[in-house]
Image 1 (cartoon, chains in turn purple, green):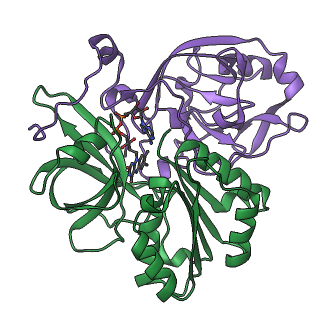
Image 2: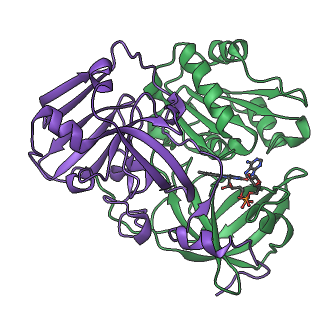
Length: 201
Length: 238
Ligand SMILES: Cc1cc2nc3c(=O)[nH]c(=O)nc-3n(C[C@H](O)[C@H](O)[C@H](O)COP(=O)(O)OP(=O)(O)OC[C@H]3O[C@@H](n4cnc5c(N)ncnc54)[C@H](O)[C@@H]3O)c2cc1C
């Protein structure tokens, strides 16, 4: 049933087909986070892969910068209903991280951990096969602190809360453990095309 | 604690509309949610055009949690706003629209969370903070609270009379209005220092407004020595 008097401003057809259900296109790059930006020093920055609490490998910023680079361009979708088209990212793919660590995924689930103590869960299959990276550059420039720099997770096929800012590590977990938002009623998986915003969607 | 309750869309009726400022109107919606509202949460509103096209936006709940089956939204009518323009120019009492909620699990305050409570709002970003203050007054009046509210001009201050009355009559609540004027005199370190001195060290800080405001205010507060994990932010856009 329609809302009396509302006609709206539907976007052009070409935009509509690129928008997942319930999303609006924005030209800005909205910032979303639960608290202030953390202070991060590249001298002490460290990225760690863990299996449970056991560290598998850590990289300093200098070591991280020497890893093979990956680029990705495409659309990103935030659960707060905006989508941004044609974003360009560069960083290190999770495949390359694992290869450098010389390990295979020990479990099927991972928790991404941020310097602000934020966490979010992603099934491991969604992080590998070129589907995710630890991004250090956006639009050709080093990632700003506001957008999660120096390094954030990028899992563009899921809602953007899964792309944890200020990433400090990935932790393999035995079962699918909910992260910060997932414990607060957001969907465990978060596929924008199936509109999995909240638990039960 | 994974919350397994679904958030379905519900039809709600507008049961009251009142002007608040030149640009902002108050809308009271009759809606029964499955779970109680927590101060600071928002709803998503969905409007449907005759051809099936839908637009959705988020609006904070301005009213304190209550069981009277209604919520209040305060909507700033943007000149070209697709959804806020509908609220501003078309919506009437008796109209129905769809909402889902209550949404949000981080930018929330419960009486048992206690204080001191520092609330920092810019423009319509004061709306979820208003819900916290309204809730505090009835459920936890002993909690010290200070609202630092930045607005362009005094006639753009939402709930102005209510806030002034609260500051006069509620022990433990202080109001600091910061008017930026056209020149945009922003909140700075001195204003933050005054707020912290008047309130004492806050246990919880909530900052809400447009993106640049929230970034500036949270940097100032971290710069003033507040522990980042005690600060929660909500950004309306911009
Ligand atoms: C969690 C949350 C809670 C919110 N709570 C409230 C609330 O309580 N009250 C409220 O009024 N709004 C609130 N908002 C903002 C609201 O969701 C909409 O973004 C806003 O009403 C604009 O939507 P629109 O469809 O009218 O404008 P659109 O059609 O989306 O935009 C119209 C034009 O206005 C510009 N524009 C959009 N937003 C702004 C702005 N803030 N200032 C200046 N220009 C702008 C756009 O760039 C665009 O050019 C909240 C947002 C979030 C995420």
